[in-house]
Image 1 (tube, rainbow, N blue to C red):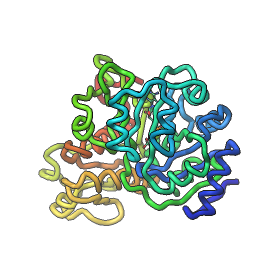
Image 2 (image 1 turned 180 degrees about the vertical axis):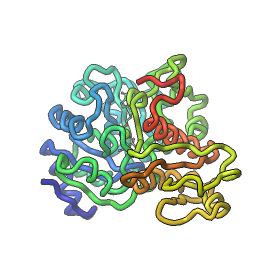
Image 3 (image 1 turned 135 degrees about the horizontal axis):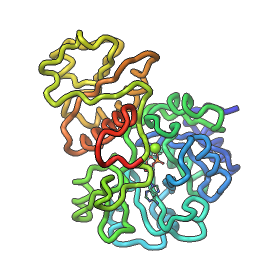
Image 4 (image 1 turned 120 degrees about the vertical axis):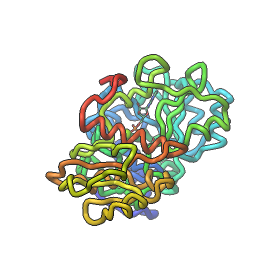
Length: 338
Ligand code: TXA
Ligand code: MG
């Protein structure tokens, strides 16, 4: 049986003890909830893959209490790593680096690299400090589903596979961390996320962007899989939305739309979610996954999502929206890999 605990001293102690005992713990980070396991414990890591239904070739991010602890797991620590860590840790950035042995053998196996992150959420930091081990933690969803931004979403997906769920309330960023590889000749962004590209470039200069087309550097292994998708199909609304949109012609459809569009069309009620203004990408990031889960009721024919401007965090939001749409509708572009 699993236990749901508050994010107080007793809950943190229980979570840390469970991690040390090789059990799985769901805990809040500032991005999304993580499904944590002791990164040094190969058997616990196998349980993570089983609980998520995650493909074995998709590696996990290791979470450490501070930069020094992360650095011990890297075999090389270029100046760019120090600069990015100084600028963004603790926070929603993951760095991929050549891995140090033997402490990354269990989590990275055949890979030459390891993904490292120092989370900013105070509860995550308390659990990491109390556990005293690095903690591997993918997002706490079943593989392919929207990441959980509330503890109830993680429980709905993972149930009794997890020993302890720590309830830290809704997460702040709502999108996963940005993943940057420093194991490549030039810093390369493998996944968009909580830190926008322009902010990275302000710190380390030009950053290459991995594509799925096979022409540039390869994206993070996980990015080739179906992702972030509710059961109902997701469709991105056309660029001219809300012009020429006849809401009456889409019975039963749900909407994730801006405050402006909701007002123009008079959209409101059970099937309508309004994360914020079109320009408020942070609010969209915070609410997107919860909206997709809440609107995904049985028999829902479609969830329409408005496109927001793709600057800053807006690019990360739209990356997830498109992947959710692709996941539900099958391949949608020439760069689809799997
Ligand atoms: O915000 C986050 O990053 C959340 C919270 C819980 O920290 N975690 C998360 O983990 O999103 P996950 O497992 O859902 O996504 C990890 C991503 C995957 O796309 C994976 O392929 C990539 O990081 N990754 C992990 N290790 C890697 C490596 N050695 N090289 C390249 N990509 C890697
Ligand atoms: Mg994930």
